[in-house]
Length: 105
Image (tube, rainbow, N blue to C red; front, side, top):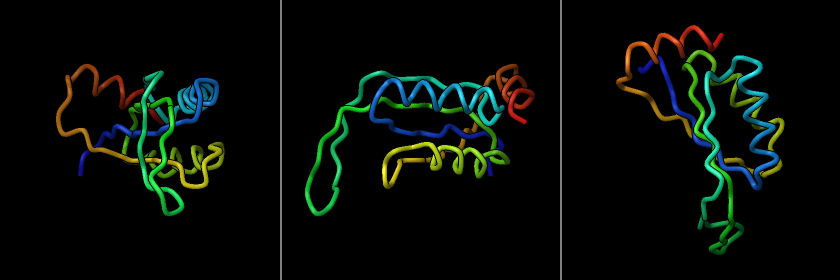
């Protein structure tokens, strides 16, 4: 299993995305969060295809901190079923990986 993860989370607006990003970084659950300001999502919800404009968070963390990070997002996210997807990082620039490891505690 990979030691590092990129976690994808969609948010309904920039304000909430910024609040979540700041909370995750300030508590050392994430080393870095990129905020992608405009994505359009199409998805099944309540028996029909729905569409939403959302903000995407790209969160860099460790596998050890994922569960705490997941709980924090779920607690502060307004969606009934927030998207919280963890993708393993199989390779990284060594200095970046060292920084990530030293930042997430």
